[in-house]
Structure formats: C-alpha cells, structure tokens
Image 1 (cartoon, rainbow, N blue to C red):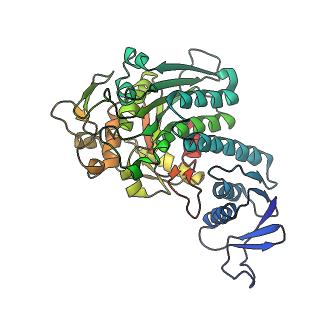
Image 2: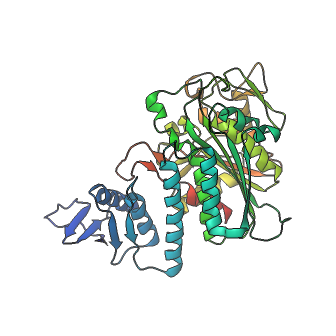
Image 3: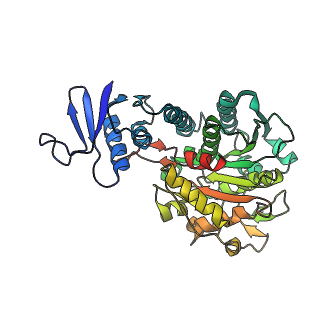
Length: 425
C-alpha cells in the first residue's frame, strides 16, 4: 500500500520544482501549492492510479475532508477495485467520507455496467436492493412493468421502451422513516433511466451510441443521493421515481409524427425519437406532482446542449424558482460539485411548437436547435404542478466521461450526488 502525504512546498530539484508528485521509497508526496489545490490533488491521485497504484494510505498532516475526497475522485478507477485508507480526521467526517464513497461506488457500479447487464428491470432491482440495504423496512416500493404502464396512464415510458425485448419499468420507491403511512411526502426525486439509447428511428451514429449505457445516469444519481442523504440522517419521507426503458428500433417502436396523450391531458408530437428522456421524465414528474410534495427534483443526462454550454466540469441547473435555483448552486459549491444555472422562463415552453399537438418533444433540428437545453427543461416544466411544488431540474453534463482525462477515469463521476442529497437535508 502506497503511503501518500501532502506538502504545500514545491518538490526538490530531483523531481523538478513544478512536479505534482515526488517519491521516496514506498511513499509519495503530492505538492498541491498553487491555484486550484483540490484539482491538483485530484490530478495527482489520477496519475497514481494511471501508473498502476491500486492501494493507497493517506497519512500525515493537511488531509482535510475536502482534500481526501478530491483524492478519492481521482483515484477511483473504471473497472479495477481500489483500496483507500483515509487519514485520521474527526470521526463524524470519517463517517461522512465512507457514506459518500459508498454512494459514489454504487453509481460507478451501475452506470459503468454494460447495457446487456443493466437493463430496465435490473436497474430498478439494483436501486431497491441498494436503498433497502441502507434503510431496511423503512423502504417500500411499487414496480410497473411493460403493459402495466399503460393501465396506469404512463404513456411516455411505455412508448419509448416498447420496442425492446426487455420491457420498460417505472419504479416508485417510498422512504418513510416516520412509520406513519399518512405522513406527508417532503420531497420527490425523479430520474431518467434509459439503460441504452440507440436514438430510436432518429438513430444515433456509432460514435454517439457507444457510451449510451450512461443514459441512466440520472436515475442512478438520484438513487445514490437518497441513499447518501439517508446515511446522513434524513428523517423526512421522500419518494423516488425512476422511469426506465431501452430506446430501441423495431417494427413496434414509436415513430416520428406520433402524438402521445399524457395522463395530465397534454398532447405531445414526437419530432425526434432521440429526445426520449424528456418523454419518460414527463411521466415521472406527473407522478411526483400527484404526491403533492413541496419539493420535486429531477435529474437526467438530458441534452448535449447543456454540455456545450457548461462543459463537462459542471452540471446545468434549471428552475423558474430563483430562490431554489440559487440554493442548489450554493450547495454545489459547498460540496465541491460545480453546477451552473441556465435560462428558463415560462415563454421557453413555446419554443417546441406543433401543428398537431399541444407541443412537440423538440425541434426538428440538429440538437433541438438554439437553446436546446432550456427548451428541454421548459418541456419538463409543463408536467409539474408548480402551484403546489417547487421544482428544479439537473441536466447532468458532468456525470460521465467518455474517456479518461487528467482528473477522472473513464465512466461515471458521481458528480451531482452530494448536491442533490444536500437539498433533501
């Protein structure tokens, strides 16, 4: 096990004064002085892992909670198990580090799994098992599978998933620590669980499709956020709604030009079958509104437009509730998971017009046209009862890396988990 220490001083001449890491025997020292020290620590951890180090012990002074977490983020690997011994810190912070790691490790496990392994029913089962392992009998759930979705009016999830040989699923999981079946629901989490996205008849290219196992990142993120919040002592009732499907091509697939009539009466023309995430989330947001929860949070790998706007280091935030928007951003800074608000106004709802329905699910243009991320968020807003619920949408631009970079291994990053968990507490 490699011993890793911190130093605010530059390395000596043997390694070069600008070296990020210096070595002595079985010990490495990270030199984190300069701008953005947390990023430097994460980069150093990534270098160590890329060099084949799979076991590390953080020792010596200077290892604050934030610095240790930055090291973990860089040290976590795509498919190789790593062992990490935390430095001695306050016992409460140590418990928090372990809980945060468990939630992030779970997300990596399910998001990095192959689409053959992680199909809709499997994702729902994994979420149930994970949260039950934390909360025990405080968790109950309902599963609607395949044609059962139509019987309950969930047209979006059924339409998107019906072409797959593996049926679509809506999971409603109820965390109720009060023991009172009539306790009010304090918050509702909604996640996009597209376990593989071919684009449907708006078919993706091979290079655009190869990483689409990550399109259930929203469902994984809100599930892990609930687990992390429970481990931190969440005592309010929270419902989790995952809308899970494979978006495939077949003779019975939904088609461009189809009009879907949702449970709330809204009609939607399909002008892009690759804008499927918003179609399944619409079901989840209607269901969340039915709980009359005062807070609704949804998360999704929804648009490439959000990535173009904020890059892959930030998640994009959308809400018509300015106070809630600012709170989410402030919490993102507190937990070192960068997030940035993008525009969303009521009039954005008119930016996807249809001649045949109340709205279209996008614009019939590449990427949904200008302002695609805002227009997608506005589409979602149509399905939330904002008169009774405060609502915020996370477009998870930073939750996955197609390839490794200087700070992250390829695959899931876990960014967004702590931010959403903090909003529940």
